[in-house]
Image (cartoon, rainbow over all chains, first blue to last red; front, side):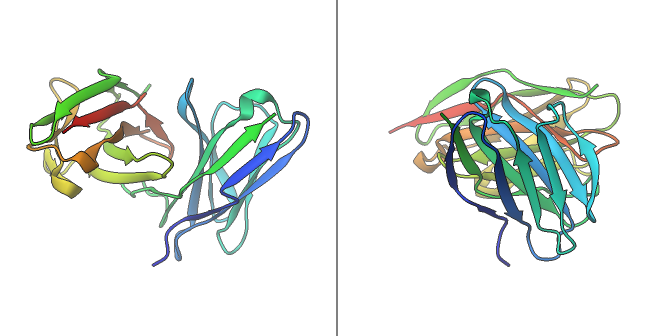
Amino acid sequence: KAGVTQTPRYLIKTRGQQVTLSCSPISGHRSVSWYQQTPGQGLQFLFEYFSETQRNKGNFPGRFSGRQFSNSRSEMNVSTLELGDSALYLCASTPSGALTDTQYFGPGTRLTVL
Amino acid sequence: AQSVTQLDSHVSVSEGTPVLLRCNYSSSYSPSLFWYVQHPNKGLQLLLKYTSAATLVKGINGFEAEFKKSETSFHLTKPSAHMSDAAEYFCVVRMDSSYKLIFGSGTRLLVRP
């Protein structure tokens, strides 16, 4: 089975712009989670989707949003980019999102905001 | 509230010597605990997980971890380090009633030849 894929792998934007990142989960997986990784804050949970519904949300401002499509692919959007949004954004998928499920991570999208 | 503390930000060992990466957790209920590894410019790979079955959990690449409820610890060990083990390791707890993972701050493992 192919793993979790994320596109693009690298992105450079300027302050004030918006950006959309994409995540394709492992085939058959219905739950997708997003995480932000920065040197200062480490890995932080953004949100989780299951069957096109957001089930959980982390403590991020409303500029961070996401959605999930009927084929389980997910996108996250960041509007009005700030320098502090520069990070590695990781996506993870699980079959059903059950508490004992393993989350499988993609390689990440490295976002640089100038 | 759940939290996880990795006691060492950096650990340095010689190749062929044992590895010990320490992790303590805080959880109101029986937690699900994980160790992930991240190699430079790569995503996260699951090493092993504990989900209330056997307290000694064996993972990939010779790693194992022991869940000790009395000490609220979940330390990661390997009998003999290999150069390819050099990476950053994350101890992770799953929140009881939701689906998000809480990550420790990470331990960077350096393996000396």
